[in-house]
Each structure stands twice: as structure tokens, then as C-alpha cells.
Image (tube, each protein chain N blue to C red):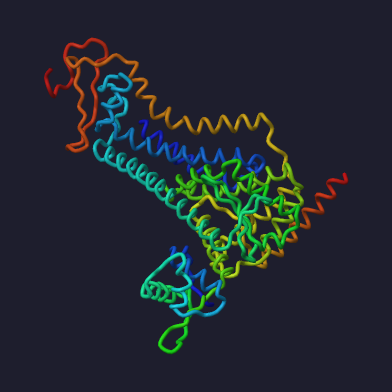
Length: 357
Length: 132
């Protein structure tokens, strides 16, 4: 099996397993931050595998081969031989298209992410100017509006936002717990994980494992912030605050969310409450180590698989031009033929000659 | 429902005009707005008139005739606009997995009952478990 096919199979299997694991993700909630890292690693592993699959398939026919041969000091003939794929130019073209498309989409998603962040900051600044006031006592910005809400904005200046409605609704301990939850988001820099998930989701939204990644990660990170806040505040207080804010009623003029989103929000909130009041058994250190090893493996496997033929080729002696000839067509030419004839020990004459020395 | 459906932050002049009208608490003529803005900005009457006309077209302002001129008043209160802007930010952010996520997601009244019940059940279980 060629390297490209192996990477494709890996991506397909992982991509199919992902949603299955999503359905049985109770154990992830026992170590939410680690779980989020694992999901991210899996998603990016699929993405990287597909990207590298396209590259390895396209390698023999393009300048990638010469680049790699310079980097590794490997014979270019052996390198091309190691990555040869049946199907020739058509498959190579498809591979290049796939990798190119993925790279472009990720780049575009980066641009959009930066732009979205800027818009967000501008919008929050407008809100602050219109009706916001920073209080040192709570270390938060209070927006003068009756609808209860609390959220945070990560960036150059991490800020927690509260509405005056929230302050009127909650007791002092509840307010402190909510603030601790939001500060936990900022301290643990959850926005970075969310950004990574968003990038992967925008790269190949057609894959369910990637499309659902941001929502899953967000759910786990809310639990993580709950856990962090519960270290210093009574979990019951946090749970009652959660219910109070969630059930305060829809906003004055908020755009109505689709019912599926509302339902998901309801079940997520229920899960958070149960988790706070009836905390699950945390993962043992051995389990954690295993999961961390899994994260590392997910990160490394696509790269190792993609580079193994190159490593093998780098360790082989270079092919002498007088003994054999490579026939590799660049993707622009036809008919597509790719093959390499290498000497097996000393031979009297080459099996096929296209060009003389 | 009065006011626009989609929300976006105002431009600088738009925001200044809206703030003036909110602070005034009564409908104003264009020339009142121009003089109200004057200490910070000296603007041409036509500039302010155009912007206020745009705001009206976007349904941020309502107006009624006063002789030959228009009297403008805000279509939504400052608090309502704030809530709209905030909800819009939170809604779009969660769509694109942005940096913002509210502490508790909005749920409707049916789910609210379920949630309250779940809370009481969990609290009871917790108390029982504590006693054992």
C-alpha cells in the first residue's frame, strides 16, 4: 500500500471513529481539559493526514521531490521510487488539489478568525462606551441592561462582562462564583483551544468529526471552567447561579435561536448542573498518562507515516545513472507512466532504457 | 416590534447622534442635534440630516413632521439596543466558535422547568449522598 493510501485510510478510519466516540463521550467529562485536547488532536490528525496524503501522492511528479532530497540528502531517484503511486498524473493532480484546497481553507479561516476577533473587540468597545462601566470591586465591566448575562472576552486585555440585570438577579456568593467561572476561562486561555477547533472545522466542514469539533470543545471547556471555579466556590452556589441565569427568560429583543440549538443548550446546562452537584470520579493518573500518550501519537502518526519512505530512501545508496533509468513523468505530460527500475545487484544491461548517460 | 432586526455597532457619528437622542428623552429637530453635537464636533447641517435620515431608514429612529422639518426620536431604548447588540455578539460568536460564550445558554420556558427540576433532584441526591 502506498503511503498516500495509508494516510487516507488512517484519516477515514479516524474520521469515522470520531463521531462514534462523540456518542460515548461520558468519560471525557471526567477530565474535560484533557478530553478537549484529545478531541483537538484527533481532529487535527485527520486534517494533517489528508493534507500529507495529497502531498505524498503528488511528490514524485513535482518539485517537492527535489526539495525533500536536498533536505534529507537522499537520492532523488530513490525518493521518487519510494513515493510512487499507481495512477500517475491524474492521481498526483488530485493529491495536489486536495492539499492545496486544505491549505487555502486553513489560511482563509485564519484570516476570518483575525477579522472576527477585531469585529468582536470593536463591538464590545461600543457596548462599553454606550452603557458600560468597569468596576474595580468586581474586576468586570457592567453593562446597563436588564437581561441577565455574563461572558468574557479574551485578548490583549482580558475582560469579564456582566449585565446590571445579573447583579440584581444573583446573590453575592452566586455573583462571585460566576465571576470565578469567567476568570477561569481567561486564565486557562480557552480561547486558544476554541480557535484551533474553529480553524479545523473551517478547513473541511464536510467531515462530521471536524464540523462538530467546536461545539464539543466548547462544551468540555465550560465544564473545565466550572471545575476551576468549584475549587474556590461552593459548587451548589455555582449550580443555582447557572439555573438562575439560564431561566431568566429570553432577551428583550434577542434573535430567536433555532430550536435545535435551544435544546442542545438545555441539555448541556443540565449536564453541567449534574456534574457540579454530583461530580464524576476523576480519571486516574494512569488513565491520564494513557490519554496524553494518545494525544502525542495522534500528532505524530501522520507525520511519521508520511516521512517513513523518505527516511528509508535517505538510508539507501544513491542510484547510479549508468545502471538504471527512472521513468517518472511530471504531472503535465502524458501518457501517465510512473515506474522505477532499480538494479538488484550487479546486472549486465538495464531492463529499459530511455536515455543514455 | 419597533427597531431594526439586525444589529451592528454604530459608526462614530451615528453613535453620537443616538446618544444625544437617548439623553434628550424627547424628540429633537435636526438643528437641535447639530447644536447639541457642537462642542465636540462642528458639522454641517446637511451632514447630520443625511445621517439621521439614514438612521431612520434603518429603523433606528422614528420621525414625525413638525412644520417643514422632521422631529426624530429613538425607536428603541438604550437598554434595548444594548441587549440586542450583546445578544447579537454572543449569537454570532458561538456560531463561529469565537472567543465569546455566555455563562449560561438561553433556554425556553419548557426547558426551564426541566432544568429547575434537574437542579432539585441533583441537590436532593447530593444531600442524601452526603448523609451516607
